[in-house]
View 1 (cartoon, one colour):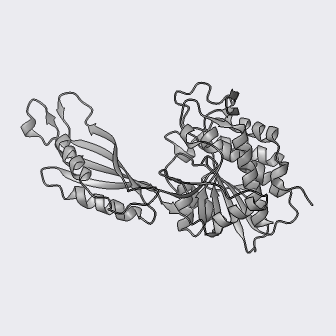
View 2 (tube, one colour):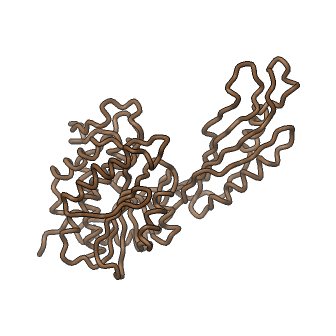
View 3 (cartoon, rainbow, N blue to C red):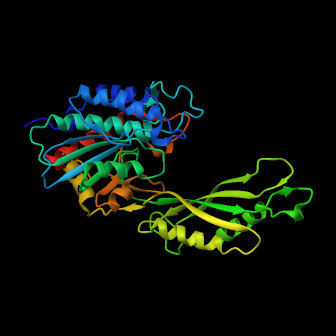
Length: 388
């Protein structure tokens, strides 16, 4: 009997791969997916790594990398979507060193993005390398490296599917989830509320209209706004949170003629971002007074929920059962990524991968080597079981 792909993933090789990924910085900046460091990470780091393994693909208009394996006309298809962009270095010391730590729990790799995007990316590359060597690939497989990762929007994922020209039936969003399968996650829509007033010198406030006073009314109105009585059994209730306030003009002793407030509206599964935005827009535009108030919808991400009895979790559980392992444990997440978008396009998807979520964006971000290898082997089992 041929050796299972998961058994042939060697610890030293996947650790070295993860270190190479961490040592090439690809932080989020105001340029988002167009950030040169992110694009260079894909083109100058990952493309050569994959070429060394005989894997070659194409770049789309947003710089996403796509590699397709297996027959185009197949009854089964699966996509592994990985991410290039990480949180900025912030206050992390030596964020791109990729050093090995000896922790009480075992050896760990330290570096920016290792627990969030780059550990799962390393695990995915190791698994794809194994499936490439298979002589019996009967399903259609897509490896996608998205130029996103921290943008909070679906633009890159939409471009991936548009470039492919079809939607795979199953998808894994390769991200750190403590190696638990995310059965569901909240979505999110960003909303900016702009309050317009009239500027004047602050010694004669009666000659102006203070936008700050209008902003206070907006905050009070939205604090009292019900965002839904329904509660999800695992995710709880939807939330609406003010995350930023900025006023203009930037001048001393001046009544402010504009205030911009940013809100984060979290969405439960089956809640629509357009409906949530419309509710907030209606509430603030109905405020009486001398101000003019408008709401603008920003970036959004769809919520997601899958069933343990559905095709994706069933395929994952079957792949582990074939190796004598029990089904993976599960979680529900309050954060959002691309699983909801893929599901909305007909690809049943879930976040799943090595990396502890409590490590995200921390100043000591690290990933246990044992968890990295376990994640790579899980990916390899799934690809082998579902596609071969």
